[in-house]
Length: 420
Image 1 (cartoon, helix red, strand yellow):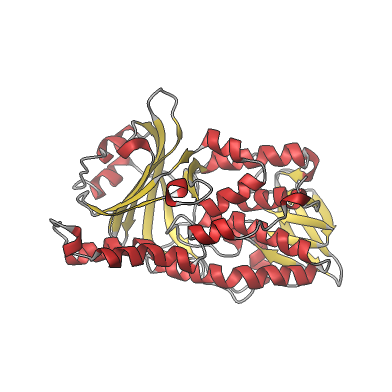
Image 2 (cartoon, one colour; image 1 turned 180 degrees about the vertical axis):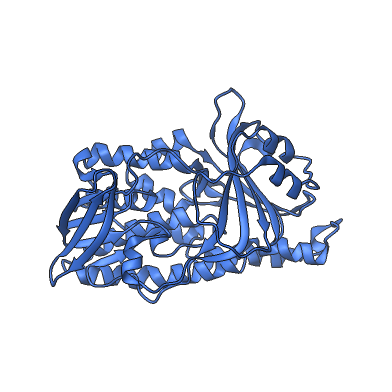
């Protein structure tokens, strides 16, 4: 069996490594001519860390990221609403890692080139079209620098090419543009002194305005950590700015919007002032679709289920997609049947998570506190009973099959005895 992967991001590279581990031949085509470690922070949930560990990448993750031990929710005044343990501390067999997205992609890319070979990974190759026959799929690709056309064929083709997926556009030519939630994210990464013990992710605020911050790797100076911060803001204008890793925004705009925010455990204003480059992203997703698989073509990651970054799920779910797809291909020699099996298993769950995220997911407690106690509180249980906070926190992970019992207890997607 041969597989063509369109897209060399986290999902595409994870799928390539997974297929190689299972003994399935693969070629990857990435439209960017020279991959660089762009982006900011990402959280890898234990469900995804398990899969990367089984791909032999545990030591690389440990060197590059930070194991998060606690997730804490605060109101806009910095008062604690709810705190929960994460990763190993929460009973998982694998950690939750915060890591720079670019570092993660480069880590995966190195593994792909070492294991699968440079000759099976092609940069600067954009998919123009694909056609299917009864037993093959033929892809036409264009070199973005020279314009040279390449024809390749395989048993299946997988679109791992992100929210603006060319593969998805061929499958759904009349699909609307991404759904804009009328919120902007101002994001950056900078070395800073640890806060709240150096292993804590914080989310503070409410639906219309919030701050997220977490450490995601060692800093250049002793005693400092590379820290990801996000200021998220509702905006009245519904004009959609297309995502761009290089769209910059001024410090003044961010500081003005968050001028009244003060936390005793983190000087967010100093963090913003010291940051050389701040990037702006729109909060977007797409409406769920009724199928990812059409014959010998399917989708994974953001090409399949682009979602809002609530609950830190998007990158992790792309990795799990890759493993479930590999397992499906191992379960039957019929490629089309395998893709349908993958679709049936993953798509309903991912469609549900996408819609749950639009409803604020596990962060809903912050909005309830803002509505009931906008000027702060003396005791949080006078605002929301502890049982209700627990229910909000656990409902998301349980519905998505991300609780410790499920993640720890299920068998491996790809039997380790088959691993190379």
